[in-house]
Amino acid sequence: MIYQDRSASGCVKYNRQYIKSICSNPDAWPFWVADMDFRCPEAVNEALVRAAGHGVFGYPSADDTARIAADFISWRHGCEIDSSLIVPTTGVLNSLSILMEDTSRGVIIPFPAYKPFVSACETHGRRVSPWPLSYDGKAHRFFLDFAALEKLCSSGENDLLIFCSPHNPSGLVFSPEELRRVCEICAAGGVQVICDEIHADLTYDGFRHTSFLQAARGTGVRAVTLMAPSKTFNLAGEHFSLAIFPDNESAAAYKSRLQRLHNSGPSYVDNLMARAAYTGGRDWLEDCIRTISSNAELVDSFIRSRIPLLGTVKPEASFICFIDCSQIFEAVLADQDDNPELYRVQDSPDATALSRFFGVRCSVAVNPGTFFGPDYGQFVRFNFGTSRERVLTALQRMEAGINKLTAV
Image 1 (spheres, one colour):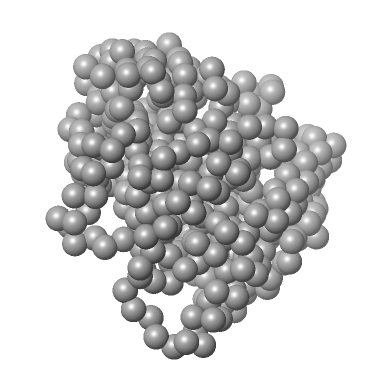
Image 2: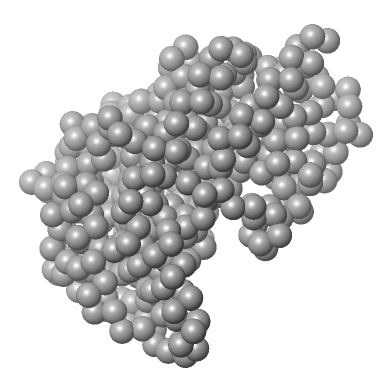
């Protein structure tokens, strides 16, 4: 993969004020927000150059975009989907927000959870019903708690589950049997499912992503799957996604709702980029998966051998991982109390003690675990979607900072 210096590109990942807000140090290297530092597929760049050379950007005409997406899904996942059931639309969160209007009671969300799922519920005035994943602190691995899900679905208080597969931030790839069980429990309780599969295309070799719609067939559950090229091809910020429905009636109802909102879908440029990526980015994607899975192995092996006070929740997909910092947590709190002028709590309202520690003591900016729920303050999320050299440097900085912390 081609590493691209993005420090002067205007992207939020390298914005000094944002970095400061999560770690107190605006000069820390960014390993936080979920996009990569790799140059996107040349097919995308070439399509943009051609369009810029033409010089006119009008309303898009992309009648075959759904077919192009279906062809890509078949190639990547071996899942055959009728293109008439695929609705190209704006971003995943926009689609999720619209689809939530089909339900009215509580919303079940697995925790740790991508924070905008919770924010979407709050915007709609909906009550969140947390479904905490079970956690094995010795193996550093999360598991689905089916008994807890059964209780939430049978209570009559909830009618929607927002699921994430593969899971963010744990990187878990769920088995067909696990997904089938989720479908059966939700069907029995009359709970609909919106499944965010934005990280699915980045599943590592040796693991296999199963579409939620595949798992749902024959169970009676009402489910919609959301996918996008944004994480897959490093096009984050371009508002293009796919809403995939189980039947023509559901797809038609969604299209009708978009028309009522005067939501005409992705822009000319967003369509252009997505189509170019899906048709011309397959070799790039395979190279990307090799790179990020190698980086994931580096993070896990380095932490196990050289920073044993931390624990990696080893991912099976994508370019992010959750790191268990519980063994250094009390020492970090003490360090923050002893050095308020260094940690500058007032300058980092979106931080935790841990994210400030990594920022000011290691010059590494990571997402605070509380971004994924109030019970995860002893975790941080680390983005390794960058060059191997930068990942290694970050790990070495973390090692030096923790050694100094624990030597006191």
